[in-house]
Image (tube, rainbow, N blue to C red; front, side, top):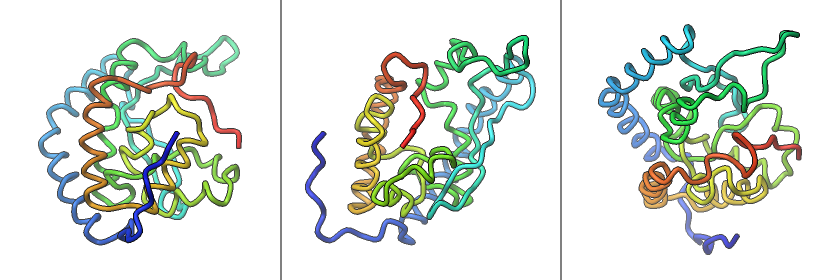
Length: 210
């Protein structure tokens, strides 16, 4: 994996301009996409029951936790001993479709609107990973987490964790409005192609063990 040359005069990644763009785009998206989200929510209510949203604490800017909101894509099926079945057994075809089309991510527009996330930035991972990063890898938290990011349009879950984190840190060091626009445009192609949704041989992605 070869990273682009470093920008010698990057803008601050958490600038007020980036925040203004996030508010405008996420607010507009919440209004225009509300029929789609309502439709997905009604489908999930019939298919899964309540709740239709998946909520989980994730580390945000500087590792400060926030509540991530997504549409549920997995059932709650359990074994005879009461333990949740493996992801592969709980992810139905329609769940895979929601993930492939990224429709499950639409509620995160609310996270962007209220300021927990940005449209573009390193993806918010599990809080349990915080103690497993190297000092350099932890720099990914110098930016707000994003719905999409530089790592997502350069391999998504098909690349290694080390490659993802290197791409995240490069984004932190090289942010610009034009880079965000480029990533958003590249995201459209990534979603349409369905590339990199999961790691090879896995339903989603393997956990990061450090």
